[in-house]
Amino acid sequence: MNLRTVLLTLALPVVLGTTRGADCCQEPAPAAPPLPARSVYQLDATWTTDSGTAFTLAELRGRPVVLAMFFASCGYACPRIVSDLAQIEATLPADVRARARFVLVSFDDVRDTVAALHAYREQHELAADRWILLRGAPGDIRELAAVLGVSYRREASGLFSHSNLITVLDANGEIVHQRSGLEGGLPATTRALLAAAR
Image 1 (cartoon, helix red, strand yellow):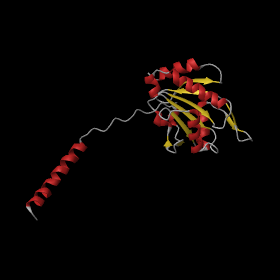
Image 2 (image 1 turned 135 degrees about the vertical axis):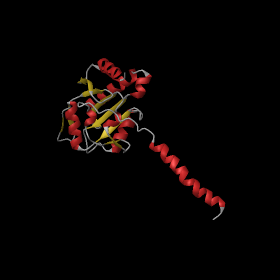
Image 3 (image 1 turned 180 degrees about the vertical axis):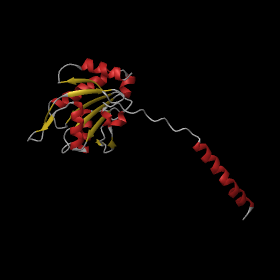
Image 4 (image 1 turned 90 degrees about the vertical axis):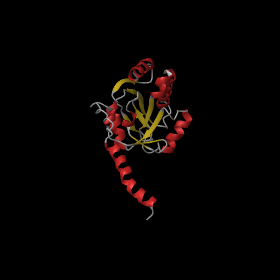
């Protein structure tokens, strides 16, 4: 064994010990405070985005969120809801627009595949950095709809009858505003989103 090998052998434990000592003394990152009991983010479901990745609603924590339930083959109400969300998005100050997320969750666990939702995104030109399109298991869809107060029913045709709600969530996922129906109410919804962004 030459001198270089001996020196490296002696030095290695010291270096490793120093590294371990530095790591052991670092303070752990503070844990996030618990979610409020009424937070939508308490729901324990894993969704799938239109890019095929797994997603939980709790990933939205810390941001103002506008959420609506829809189905991609809807020919009347859902396109109007998406148009209303786009109008809200367009009126936001640039800093709030960058932080806000617009979430569309599908009722249709059969036809709204990843590919169908991605095609819907492209058709409606929904920005990938701000709009999140989700599909999920039937039980998770029902649970989210119940929490939001959304009623829906699959018809014999495969289409859905459903209530039309736009929901604003604050940084902790609590409902701070809902616009019901398809007429009016956008200024109030925008104000609620701006307040949630503070």
